[in-house]
Length: 105
Image (tube, rainbow, N blue to C red; front, side, top):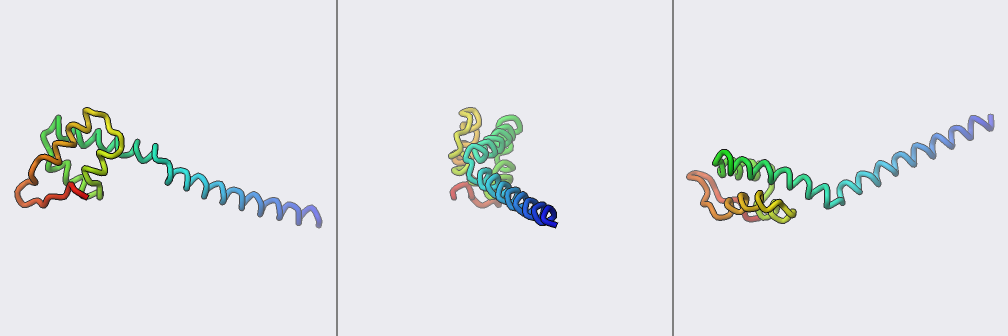
């Protein structure tokens, strides 16, 4: 009987440790600025390509707006200069007819 009680305690402790480990890992991911930079750099690469290769600045702005990302936010994440150059063009170009300006936030 004592063995069964000990096994239950050990299992409970293991469950608590796993839960705590998951919380620690989640916090690390949320607070890891490098992961945020990687995400924004990937977004920047795609947006810059859309502008440079397909001449689609309006579509690029629509994508950023739909995802709640401002040009300034994107530029604040240590982008490759090639990508940053293309993205800066979004700040200089007027919005397309019928579109509101939304790159400042």
